[in-house]
Length: 182
Image (cartoon, rainbow, N blue to C red; front, side, top):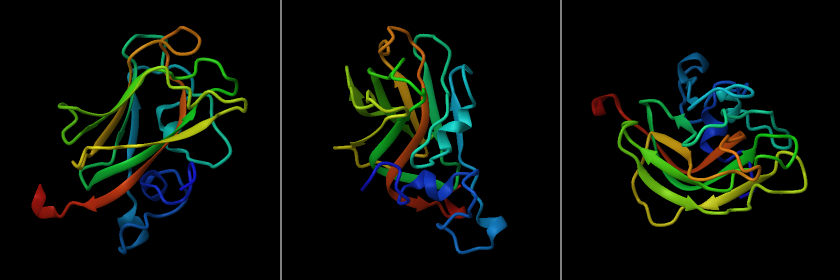
């Protein structure tokens, strides 16, 4: 596995990826899944920038400088994911405001959250090149989730509270919910 390869769920389902979902065999218009990215506040860029997973590029995109900032991905009511690993891309063209302290959470309903991984003083996104990427493995949780959220738990490398991200990829086992599950 390589950061932002073509094997992730975001690559398969992102609305602006310029392709149809490979998860469904229905017609192109019917198989188009509109997964959504949101964030706690709008700073630079757009929340949907998180779903633009071009391999070598990034976009200036972040929340405002507020404590408890977060980014969230909704796979929609159609899907649940057993997450095995995830990749993030820093959201600045310089090594400023790099995310260091956060937790990854999963939820089925968007209200009750399960912590999937805690990061404290994690230097994975702090690189010499712009828009650095890193992948982490998820150990121990065997539940499937619809929502995934990055929640800031401390200051970034600029001693502020904004979260600058310009990409996420989710890896694991994706299941399509049948209409009888609703």
